[in-house]
Amino acid sequence: MMADMYGNLRKRAGKDYDLEEPDIVIDRDDVPARKSDKFHWDIWLLLAFENWIFDFGRPIAALFVPVEWFPLNQPSIGDYFHMAYNVITPFCILKLIDRSSRKLSPTLTHLCVIIFVMGSSIHLVGDSINHRLVTIGYELHLSVRDNPIMKTLQPKELVDSFELLYNYDEVIGHLMWYIPFFICFFLYFTGCFKRKHEHMSVKAGPAWWFLIVFSGLYYWYLVTEGQIFNVYILTYVAMIIFWSKEKSRGQVLDINGRFLFYTFTITLLLVAIWVALLWNDPVLRQKYPGVVYVPEPWSFYTLYLKDQKPLHEIKFPRFH
Image (cartoon, rainbow, N blue to C red):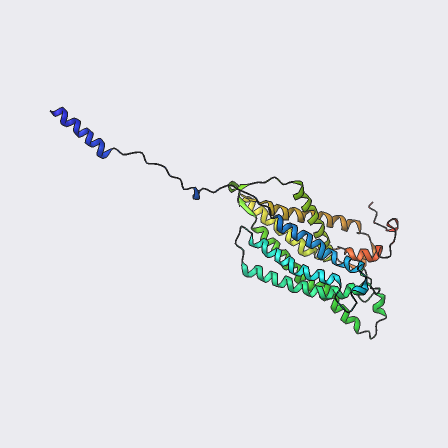
């Protein structure tokens, strides 16, 4: 009888106090998923092609389209190209920033885009008049006062107005155009970093590398013709510093950030080659004095190619 009572107590105790091993539940939302890079082909392609067509191509189109189609007192085809550029480029910049993985200040980005549009619009007017002057003998490799057509201008005070126009075109317009432009690129670059354990690298194909070279060549033209090497190199150095800082924190650069950085690296290489080739040119040296010597491609054109001078007569510097 005592044994039966003892057995019942053991069963009851087992029933009441035996604890089941709890199930371990893992919330998958708390575990960071490894996400692969997604390259923004639509924006980068649109930006590359519209840069080449509407920025690089506008002075070329103005030269080859018959003047009779666009009289000198009316906007040229290059002006319409510039108008298209002033709309499409800020649109691409805003779309890029919208896709940034990092929350950026909308006030800062919108302010940059507003100043960008204002600067490029100022440049539109000044550049339109300057390129029209080329058709009547204005030499881009000479300063305003040293141009033959300016020396015969009457009254002489009109030359001051053309110098003001040049400053709006080449100085004020360029600074208001390109400083916010490169600030936007740097802001976007700061949002191109991910934690290493959350990042799955994507192998870049030949088309990706070709687009880098294609874009880098355009930014070579932008830096040299726009005379914005200081703005560009400060942006490039800031990107290197920020990348080094994020790398020390275990962050890696995604495929869009690498595209932007490699593009600017190609640009720096091309600018260095361009400057080295024209380092000892006496005429261009006179127009671009100072420590930072970066000649404009269109100045090179009016100096050596406008009169269809044969290539063998162009005297490049010799390196000893």
